[in-house]
Length: 330
Image 1 (cartoon, rainbow, N blue to C red):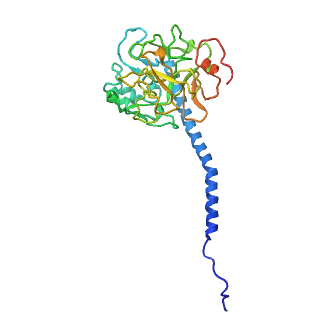
Image 2 (image 1 turned 180 degrees about the vertical axis):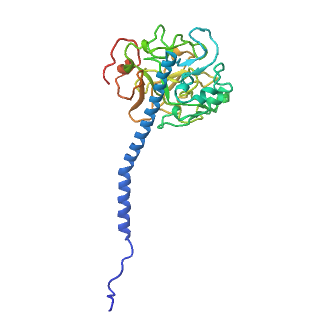
Image 3 (image 1 turned 90 degrees about the vertical axis):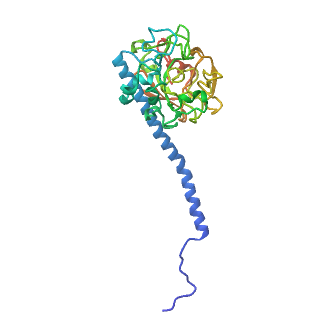
């Protein structure tokens, strides 16, 4: 049998066919990539909401055990009695919540009679745990300053979950309108915090903000105190002076010797300005890396995603606990 010499076996693709296949694959990847990214962000958002819920539940269990929420920041073992200026045993609300947030190991290592920057507390301040961080931000972020003045504080953990100090600045004279706050306008060495009970929340626990996300610096080597989870007064709070993720400027202590709260030159989405060493001048806006809003918890333990588009007046009203005015729908 003779083979027709004009017929040849085809053993591969032509260049044109290969280019067509590559173009099709590129098109499919282009179509799928946004969906994959959206799915990943949805998972990160869900993880962050779970962290927010766990902190809120820890707050409520603390309330059941102690009969009040903790101080947002504490300089003394009983700051509502001891109102003098000084250091005392400085720490943030985070320490008080450890026993109720499955962090008994950290709590057992903390010396309540010492400040956060001394041994053994400093080593605990340098230990990141997953509950401090929103997965959409920078998990395990810490404070690694380049300033020689602050080198002794190197390694302090940052975090994303902060308590509600009300509708404007961190302290307003003769007002006690939020679940957390201060009774005096002093700064890091002189303010006097207060504690609240659920019975103080006359606007309704489901209509009063408890905690929200905040953001910290995009790099560990930035001299920026925002998000310092265990430092008592500088940064682990938010105020409703502007809606979530707004361009309202964060304000906090900063002087020529210590960079203090913030460095507003690093990230345009984290505007910041220095202020005096007084809570009367400080405000921090709720922020996140989620598209469109922030996770926040309420005083009944519920969690909601608050859109950036929320009307500013409603956001401020949600931050108050006893105004007698309904926050309305959002």
